[in-house]
Length: 149
Image (cartoon, rainbow, N blue to C red; front, side, top):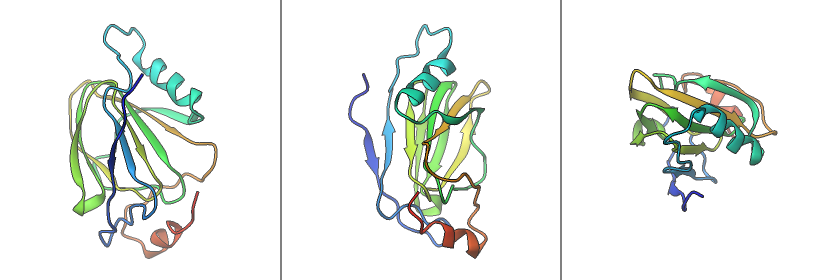
């Protein structure tokens, strides 16, 4: 059972709106994956059991700053490690390791800065909202982020 999450709020940095109402939640070691033969399956099961099993994926995190204006996102580290900047240019960098889970409210900037060669990230979305990929360079994208998914 994971402990209480670390809670972070980020301000609009001019390119990335972040979320003015909802915080980023980081659950360090949400799952103990040591000895797990199927860590990606365990994370997907965790997401599904909490209603975040829509359109799960298994890859990594983009190396460019981006956000999803109309949907929240959960990221779980199944294998490897990464340094990820959250909150856009004015944000913070976090070291993520196997078993860590990050919940990003719609509009929150995120970007992979470094990764181990074996990094595997599982992503998931809640049942409500529309997926889109925004880089912060288009004013029309920012207008979308004012909607509450």
